[in-house]
Length: 442
Length: 182
Image 1 (cartoon, rainbow over the protein chains, first blue to last red):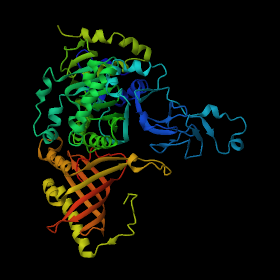
Image 2: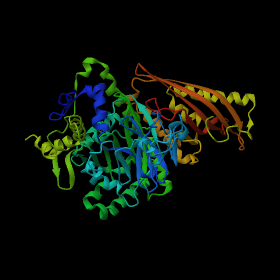
Image 3: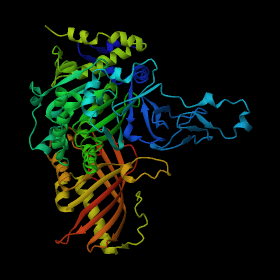
Image 4: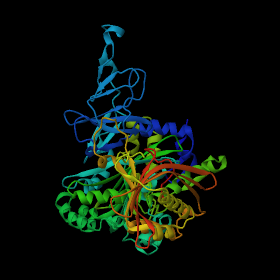
């Protein structure tokens, strides 16, 4: 049995390197994290019409997400129930039926088995097609247009799973008219463990002035000191019950989009004022700022840079990255197009910032081939003891230049991995906030 | 050329042998400058100020899907001269930890066809290429691509790249990143 306490020391902010390499730990992650938590599937704007579908992953299980006739959304394992062959070979499109390439069993968009070639002649009159529909994803819900699926019927609702993170999501995703994803995702496979990218996106402000020093100098003409984020005015980080977290920097949101989309500064300032009536004054002040964030376990976003990502594990040492650009539906087509180009330019496969990060993610994983290396532990102690509550902001707050969000991600990892089911996980995390604040050094 | 636009080039006039040679030498020189990290030389001597430089990846759908290309394409590059200049400046800072130690790249250009455009002194050039990148002792990656370029002869008599549309082979990028010019 995997000893979770020996792998992630929540009290001390350290993690064993084994969680970035070992197969038995990874298999338990697939079971206790990916087959249990709510996972991002796609955005409603990617499948607006009846029969529109998008194929994605939940852990290593491939699923097809389909808009139903009544406007609801269904999701099913992407495999024929006859001999188990992969069913839908396209990654997106529109269909009224899905036929298996092997023998031709055909399914409706609602997952029911509609037709079996030579059914009467070969199977006889008693064959019950109702027993052989597609395997449905246990729960599918959407929040502000973001569709999530969950393989565990005992899970809490999506909004309960988001918890305090929903308040923050309302600020950028709850805009009038809503959010729209722009085109298909870019996709790449890197040689990293799946946890490294979401860990980085949840709050690693520390790396920005170092890893990205070159590109920031090229863009702004100046070298940004790492110390810039140490100021109390730099922003703050948030962690929540199930490990979702953000870093919100008080700097202007669209800074990385400035070469092509200078008009975004005006857009966000104006929209920020409009948001006051919708989310309140305190929350609306966050709208036009730059955020990084991760929803546990494996989707991340950059607000202000208009990038949304899903990180799909492929074994313990590979990750498939899906990257979408997004915009607000109310924006002009011209601005949407420029955002699409600019977002992929910074965080797509040829991204002038992304490329710096990928090399780091890969070389965090690869050294773990070494037996002795793997016995070592890693450090996320920056800013420990400064956890606090703030009246204006839900969740537990930490400094912007800290590893507060990252610690939250591994706290949630340990909670999931050490719980046999949702009941245990909910009981274990019921007093998460008090537990976290109690740790505060005097 | 894996592009739906006019794959047979029926109405185009192929260039004569001497011009074809000049164009091929242009493509070879580009590969040499880029492989040698002479990015500024490439940009200032071979790229037209009015450049549109695109690298396109298309999603995979059933043949019957008639969605417009604009809804199906991702452009990891869709750059004008100022953005290409920004990318070159990123390399010139010397601050990219990713590029230290340096990497070796080898671009191989092939299947070159060239045609006269309607505008005098402009040529449409099709080519295939592979690029291999070796780095960090063990890394060895290769990308395969097709290109559709327009070259324009400037007032100084030199050819320059006016537009380039690179279609990358494969839906999923498997080579860590595409932080290089093709």
